[in-house]
Length: 304
Image 1 (cartoon, rainbow, N blue to C red):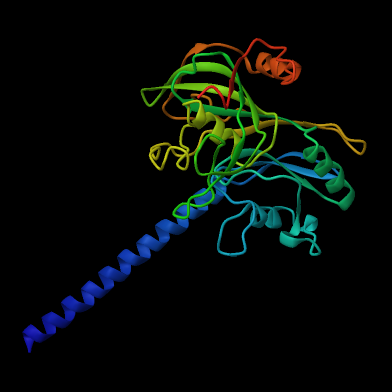
Image 2 (cartoon, rainbow, N blue to C red):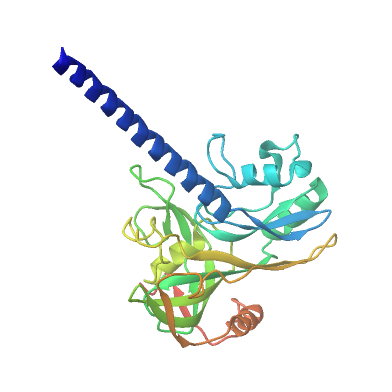
């Protein structure tokens, strides 16, 4: 009888211990999710009667059909319930996109007219965008113009990726051009890395990530284009830093703080300053891909 009682007490203790561990794990997940939500809450870069422009967090989808998924849409619905348009799918008019892993400027139009104007600017490549990135290795040339078409990578086992036109499995490649300007060379967790400004001349999906990988300098933390190898960093080091769009209804001239400083990125240690961001933007603004009016190293599809 005593042994049976002790056995029942032991079972009860085990069940309670297991329940306690599960509760503790659930609580940790909740706290982790709360920290994630807090860390990745967007901040307002610009707000007017026409546009809401935010600084999007990294590792967060813009929208998704699963209500349990953390998305920019959910965040904005809570932050700005008065701006939600029930007539529009997902509640807001997104005039462009950012990848899940990319942080930075994201513009939402608050009415049909504003959406039409900004979408027109994007369609005809009149929006000037600058990204900041940390890439693997030390880029040899201070200026690189990458002129290589990109298209869909046909891979049933891992769909959704893009590739350059020289890849044998590339489907329907289109003109894709990127200007890269080096800012700093240094070390990331002891390995060579370069901080760069990226100006997309065209606007293809995954363009910057594919072009950086193509020249042998994959973006730090890019799980996809490092072939699932670069898993140590907390995030992919790509950020939409600046956006300029001149329109009849309103001019947008937007900039966000630099997220890739040693104070903010553990493990990043710049050793050599090559160019200030202001100088890089000045060079980017005067660069014309049709005339190469900046001394650049041009990489094209025939160089490989």
